Image (cartoon, rainbow, N blue to C red; front, side, top):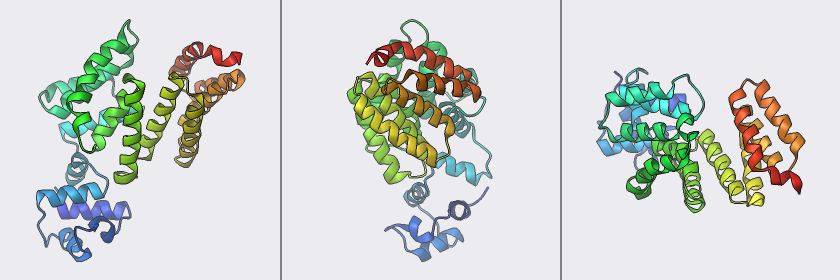
Length: 281
């Protein structure tokens, strides 16, 4: 296992972060050099500060220290994040099985509850949304809403359950989440993109198409910047929907299916029915 100093050095170099940048106002550059060469021991609070300055969670940092071998908890977090990013092949049952082995860990228990509550099979059942709310709202009330700031895992949890909340709460969450990403985790641009897209959806749900379009155009620019053309198709679909352009809506759904995401294309076809009134303007 790498020492903390070695791991900090490797991450800093890989991410092209200067010693001055991670030092902030808490260290001078020479102190960072000593830390990286194991000539200065770190306190816990100092380590947490530097880990966050590099845009890492503590679990991610331990993963790097362990030469990129995941601990059981880190693996669960990794699978959870990829599940909501639509990456990786782990199923809901795979993740829940791993969570069972670490039951009692607060983070793992929250992940387990969220995955169970909002997976497609449960949401598509009669009363699925209401049942999901009953499981998710306590996590918000008893934990997430009480934090002064959100860490990376907290942000991914919120992204996964965003649509569960009422419109006022979602706006509050989205504004604070984007602010937190901009200030603390600027490398999480794909997560920021998700929050902007989800905010637009909430605005559409509330009938505020003007604000929804503003956010969708922001998302469009960011998706292009990030080369997330899969997301771009989805965004263009929502823009066309807000504009009441049925042909463009159908074009984007067809393009999504041609790109191989037939499941999402089928979901969007069903969604159109909810917004049929937009084509009658």
